Length: 103
Image (tube, rainbow, N blue to C red; front, side, top):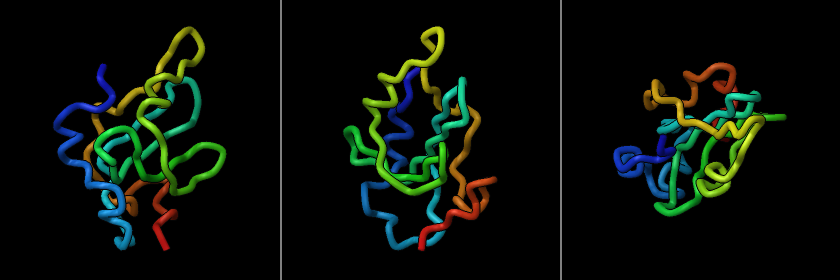
């Protein structure tokens, strides 16, 4: 499965386009099937860098890389996946990440 198809690429706002929004729209969700890490992208530079909410050891806003996500392998060669059933959603509607609105 391709992690980032053309439809999602077109839908993602450019980096910094939503930085003043308190409740930005999560456009795409990536997750590790072998652990609890999840990446929710709100912006993309069109090449490799996303900005969004990351849930792992902590929940925080930050940048993450498409190439690193694509290169990551888990047990038995598992890969990070894109949630095929995820629809664009305001961050306030995510659970448990809804508390992590931007300041």
